[in-house]
Image (cartoon, rainbow, N blue to C red; front, side, top):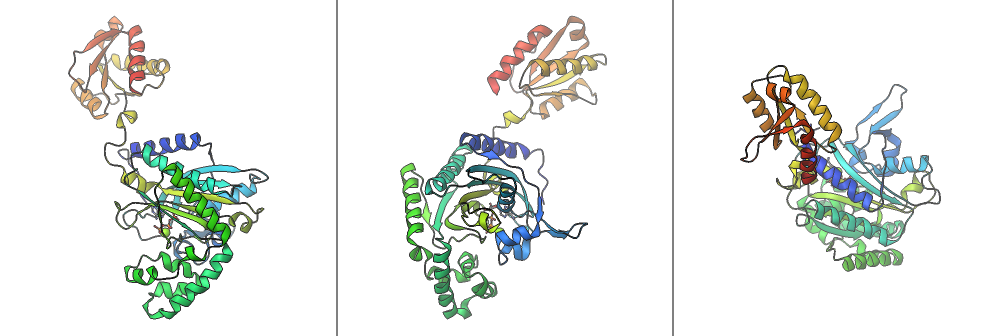
Amino acid sequence: MNDILPEQTPTWQFVEETLRTLLASYGYSEMRMPLLEKTELFKRSIGEVTDIVEKEMYTFEDRNGDSLTLRPEGTAGCVRAAIENGLLHNQTQKLWYLGPMFRHERPQKGRYRQFHQLGVEVFGLEGPDVDAELILMSARLWRLIGLEDAVTLQLNSLGSSYARAMYREKLVHYFQQHHDQLDEDSQRRLHTNPLRILDSKNPALAELIAAAPKLTEHLDEESRNHFKELCSQLDAAGVRYQINPCLVRGLDYYGRTVFEWVTDKLGAQGTVCAGGRFDGLVEQLGGKATPAVGFAIGLERLTALLDEGVVPLERYRPHAYVVRAGDTAQQHAALLAERLRDEVPGLRLQLNHGGGSFKNQLKRADKSGAPLALIMGEEEVINGTVGIKALREQAEQQTLPLDQIVPFLQSYVAGRN
Ligand code: ATP
Ligand code: MG
């Protein structure tokens, strides 16, 4: 579980602000759900025979003896909340949430025990145009944050549950013929969740998996058309993708469309965004049958991909740092700072605290990243003026009367924000 330090938060804030604006521009609304849910909810939705439920959940009994779990993902809680609050009655919903998720995994680069996801879910719409919108929206996000060349899209269809059941039999038959080549995990999965063998990261199985029967060849008619239509909408929009017949996703609730945005720049943990359709989940969790589709982005992996220089740091630094010379000026400096914050919307102003020599204060001003120092000295107090010193460029120090400093900063801020 990581601390996210002040030097890293500008990257996070940049990503979060970009996401909020993007999601609003597509008409999606935010949901905020609890971090804890009943353990049962995750078992029923994610599936008993999945990595998450088998070995990754933080589960405990509360004081009433109820079994609770720190959410390992957001979809289950989002569906629960939507059902409970009547959000799915004869209406569609386009929702998003952002926050920490918890999985007891072996920590490594790109894999942590507390990590953050943006989740986006659409309820009540079954057409492939919605799947396409989600993919286009994620593609737009990569462009907005400068990652369009770092990620590629993989796509597959898991078909209807009936088609999957038929395919499952074929797959079990195939793997049974090669039983001795399977690793221990896969031998166990053969009887509980054979599709997950396709998702195995064990390189020793790669060849066997590549030669396995393909789900794409066993799709039901409706799913095949749904998938075809999605592909043609992506083609029309100029989104490139690769169809990956082994893409099955790690959770049980998916059917039809599944997709992942992957990168080769983060070593083994290459999936940045993963999603798909889960038309059966709402009903499975006690609601009226409601088609649904969504995706989740792992924010640690995303921020790790952002090169230095991508995030406009000026946006997170103070515009000005207020220093004072002489003891009587401190209170005047503090009052000036308050007045400027009142009168200059958007101004980011940091006030020197803890005294210090004039030289030391200027050093702190420099370290804050602010381009300007505002100087309050004894003389400025007497004359009703403020000194302005540029910290990032060579320029004469100016002195402005108090009533001119406000318009000066207003236009300075307007030119930079
Ligand atoms: P993986 O196969 O990598 O374990 P998953 O199928 O468990 O992935 P999802 O449940 O689909 O992952 O989560 C969606 C996204 O959340 C992932 O693509 C990844 O970006 C991120 N993610 C998942 N688990 C972690 C983790 N432990 N630490 C950091 N990010 C994670
Ligand atoms: Mg996982």
